[in-house]
Image (cartoon, rainbow, N blue to C red):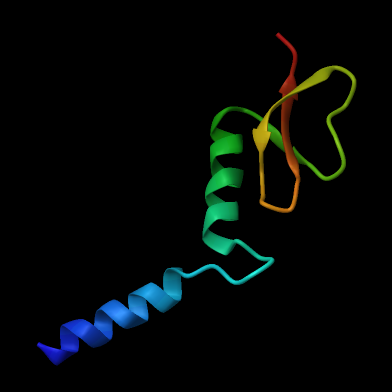
Length: 67
């Protein structure tokens, strides 16, 4: 039984994001952007693109060409 508590604690610590670096959340947002045929822009979208979301918690934008 004690093994389950230890495994749960390790899993919780592994999934806990580091402050300033949302590793798991950021990775999922980047993946979701790629699925929606977008790209991650550091500063902002190009004039012929529209923002469709965010790629990270730090403010990168997910952009794709306007339809």
